[in-house]
Image 1 (cartoon, rainbow, N blue to C red):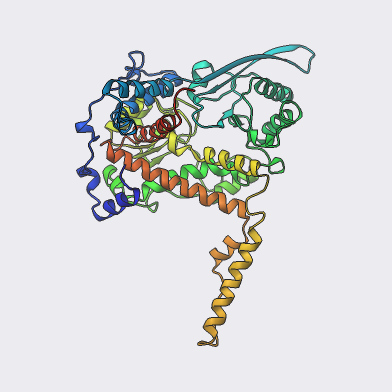
Image 2 (cartoon, helix red, strand yellow; image 1 turned 90 degrees about the vertical axis):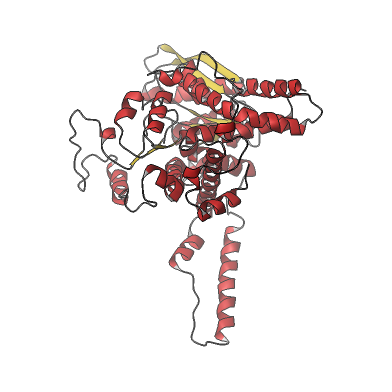
Length: 486
């Protein structure tokens, strides 16, 4: 890959480089020989109106592999110069076979005693798609319609039907069943909250693990993400997913070549109105219904999603944007704030309409960063900034005072003090500030690499394929470096 900073410098010097596609690369699409083939069972997924979630994700993976495999073959040749062509291809194919399959899958049925004295059998499902690096992580969801296909596609879901007052019994029993099968562990598999599964449920799950199979593990608290602060949760971690969506848009919306491609100006100024007051209203009322500073939508039978706008952010569950929806959506930027919301057929329509789709793999990654940070906090057994926060604050004030005293030797009437923004940075919770900074850096770096990959493979606006190539390339490298056999 090209150096990221070199690429950015080149891009800023020549903004038309995007449309000219002049980056020299032997893997560029026009010169690419597609060795890998999408399986026959998946090849027509991009024409189906309602494919399964598992088939959708597999299709995206195989599509990206078609672009990435030639590079992997060349990389393997360099790593194993004594291999002949046949052995190189067999090794690459072996790693691809591992990458394209779900590694571990569990389905468990467990009884729960209901309040009326009867017993009901519930089903829990969990999948670990890949263990190339540990621990793996994924959410737990209360949802009555998930199946094996859906769970494997999202890699970690739970299926149950429940009554509110029996919720705790279900959560605790499910946590025990996961632990018994080694699907819950701070070193192997971290679970977190998802749909209808919040901090309270995460706390119940952690408590069960601590009191049963996890009581000997000093890092047991790290097995669950999304806990309350009192149980080792991450400050503002619940905002990570939403802030990540904003960062995903912000990184693209300020890049002129990408905005030129879809006919928009850079920046936020002419694209949206940020209603901070709406958030306050929702926090106070529990809902946005009746918000006095906005009009009720009266589109009749017309879908709100079809209204004219610059940026459309779907936040419902998977497969919410089909080919029928994509035909009518007028937005120039679609930001997938939820996993698996766009079918392959809809994705192809967006590309034909010259719509910039920021894929779930990137846009919805804020919670993944938060999972990692909460896990680190728990295995370190100390909050971020606990030992160094006060020290750094006092050091900063000493530095300002030193500068002031030095300047006063030449200018007597001078006072050096921190700006409002600097003062807030010094006085805000260090854990919150550090996490926010790392989240921003992660999204900036990932965005740049996705842009670079899109350029490298001549993908134009197909950021989904670029994101998959970038991710799969790192996974392939891990398997290549680690080895395949004992």
